[in-house]
Amino acid sequence: MTVDNDRIVLISGTAHRDLSEAVSECLSIPLADAHVGRFPDGEIDIKVNDDIRGADCFILQPTCPPVNDNWAELLLLLDTLRRASAGRTTAVMPYFGYARKDRKDEGRVPISAKVVANTLAASGCDRVVTLDMHAAQIQGFFDIPVDHLYAKPVLMQHVVRLGLEDPVIVSPDVGGIKLARSYAKVLGADLAIVDKRRLSGSEIAVEHVIGKVAGRNVIIVDDMISTGGSISEAARIVRAEGAQRIVIAVSHGVFCGPAKERLDAAPLDKLLVTDTVPLPEKAPDKVEVASVAPLLAQAIHNIHYCRSVSSLFDELPESRSPAGALRPDGGQADSKG
Ligand code: R5P
Image (tube, rainbow, N blue to C red; front, side, top):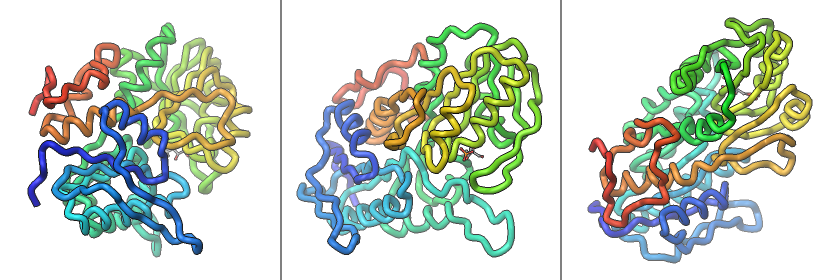
């Protein structure tokens, strides 16, 4: 199918309409006229009213809770666009649900992230844009292009403004070391790791910290907060070991189950998340939200105009040009191609 280079179409699912509207505003492209609702029995009812034949279509839909509902909606939107002869369809999933189930680590369990990948491709997805997937190697579950974005520049802008002296970046578990190291590199900070053991989906145990946090300002970074166990326990142990200010910078604030109670009770000075996922009604008191809408908009723009997406992450956050400055001809000063 040939893609009409003059037409970007943005279609929003219902998972996070506010973020879709913010992306649409950054791009100065209105959201397509589409009905995404429910039949009386709960089945998903979709009708796209705009003509999208040949267009370069981007569906904005994080597969956050309710994950199964949002995933099914995305699949039906993909099917809708394929049958409406869209030129190319990209699923923009700022949060990729089921990413934590990316391997068969015991007998008789599914690899859920692989099933998500299979169903997206089978429903007509040509490309995926996602952000801080729990495991970057999930890209390999797809045989279509996956653009993996990072919230780091967005969160770092806020962290840098705090002017924390002698900061140390803390990973709340061994699995988060790579992410933590990338933050430490930008700040020129040291790295420390919390020794965490997961007891169940919502319970964890921490015993000690590897690295020096006593008397220092700590920034705990992670890809997501789910029930808040990892972050609240990490904050508790670094405070017990003598940390001064404790700042949390996390890409996805899912905040389910006891997250609010745990985080409200934790010794945190600041809790930063992005808006990849809508804030639940019961959000932690100290939460502050940084928007990834300009970053998503810039990625959509670059994909449409065949510009590099990785170049968006070449610079330090302070010097990154705002996505508000998108040029209608697709031009961009520093694209690598
Ligand atoms: C685990 O490997 C992830 O990076 C997060 O640390 C974890 O999923 C957070 O879950 P919770 O908030 O329930 O501890």
